[in-house]
Image (cartoon, rainbow, N blue to C red; front, side, top):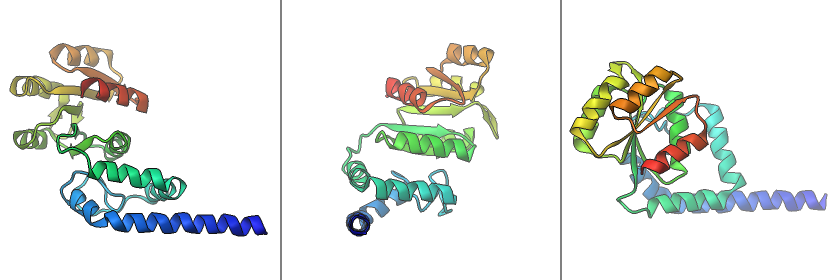
Length: 201
């Protein structure tokens, strides 16, 4: 019984410390979220509105807070204090689940992420901002990523491109030939994604 009480007290202390620390950063987090420099679990990272994440994502978030609150807080503090010249990646992907996965994985690496769902939106975005890397899906609502690669390379010669698509050796060969730096076949592992991005940024 004694050990149970001690364990419950430790859990309470962990929750209390996490809440206090989160309150301390709340204002700065809101500013960063509104500026789309980070995503918070209270809104979907792939949308501009405040759509709530599915329940399982909130459970994962809660687990990360209460199992490793120190690492969680330090991670946000590191993001807040990061240099404004942080590496930036643009994701051109219309599948919400895939976008969410990439966001979760790369945000752990301190990379600034933006997301659009169409080639037209990507063109508009690139006129105003210059990411280090574009993660480009092949099949999008308004065209093929393969057809967009030559446009990107001509307009932005220094831009690095990671093409993501289903396994297709012919498409992979074409993508690499016309300017893609790396081709990732779905489903890819987090290690493959990390290695590809780190190689290019």
